[in-house]
Length: 219
Figure 1 (cartoon, rainbow, N blue to C red):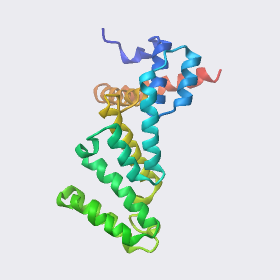
Figure 2: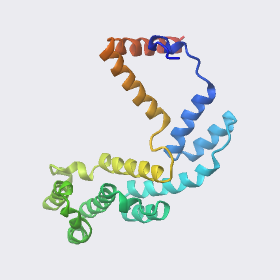
Figure 3: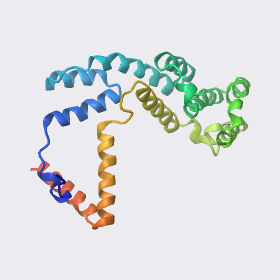
């Protein structure tokens, strides 16, 4: 039976549902030690099948974040064979990380050779042409961090690539590529937009509910 959205806060939430949401977040982000502590505290069964997967993904993501993109590619092929072959965008992003690292290390000749061997083939497809131009532009600056395309060597871009890689590996191994809390936020956003369009309730319901929760939490 459908429930009036204005009465959502009256619906009881089970502890196991909250625990599963937290567990999903910890597995997704490879927080093994925290997961083990959480499982011990809540009495939940330990997701043994996920532990080995978490450690492998954690190592791959660490490589991508710490300037070892080629190793991340190698490990990804071991864990998820064929993933990068079928996901050219992600493969390009990882290769571009290595190129950017070479540029930042002032290894411009090596960077150029790497681009010619590994990145140039992507230029045969239109959707990679602009990306290639942006990365090659880094070579024109003695201080690439001050160039108009400095974002390509920034931590935010690296983290974005690492996040895409994590999600892709999860999906390849038939695990959710988004955490439960992310899906809940997405669903809540859709519901709010729908309510706003149909009745103009959305913002009022969500903001009032959130305010009441804050008030109750401060007692």
